[in-house]
Length: 130
Image: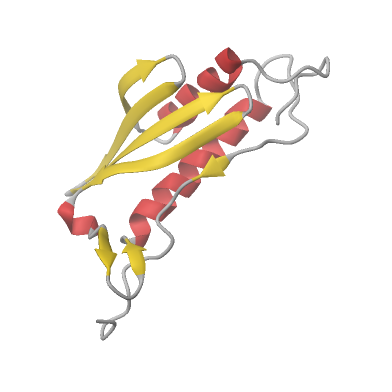
């Protein structure tokens, strides 16, 4: 869990503000913003991804909602959930931007964070994996 400079946990508002700053920094568009839940989308040419970010004062969770067909998100019979590595990179960079925004919050210093990022566990399998 992240802590403010006075030793108290970050507020939900601080976490939400860090998520919004991270999204803005990485050029994600907010589709919906409600207490505890943000839906966002990133576009790059013909590719896009939509995620759901749930959050509390204890951290945040980034979950896959949708991706463009070109990112090939699918359940593979032998390899489980797969997706193009571009999606995983977007989510990792978004998580890092949220952490950075939380670190740079005025009057607050983060000592640790409980952050869970849900990504699909693998990229598209190599040719011949069928």
